[in-house]
Length: 132
Image 1 (cartoon, rainbow, N blue to C red):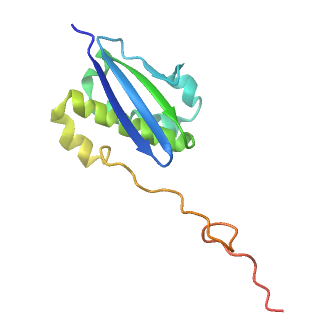
Image 2: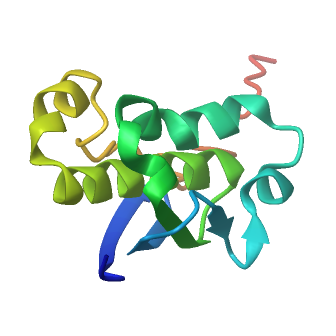
Image 3: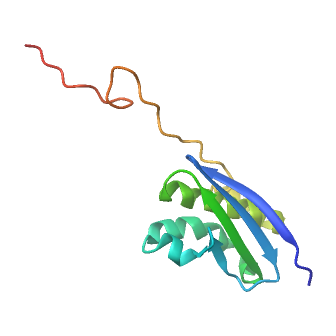
């Protein structure tokens, strides 16, 4: 078995995840040179979000995943990892396209934080109004 490498990028909010997938591994997932569980610590919701694409793919135990993620917060990073893994799985197994597409994992979530407007404390919040 050749040790083929696959590269893919995923984005969510301001987070960017880059995955390097190596064939012939043991199924380990490394995020920013730390184990997956160590990176997300006790944040189960974010772990589930990040690993959702792997639940549809049975061959994930034959590959090692090395993920570099930066920017944004932990929620955006989990979404970026999910998008990245989905795109990588699609590259490895084209037959999963319909399943991944139906789950919405291949679509880049374009929602971003709305910018702050001048004369206001936040994007839509207003200062308190006093008539007298």
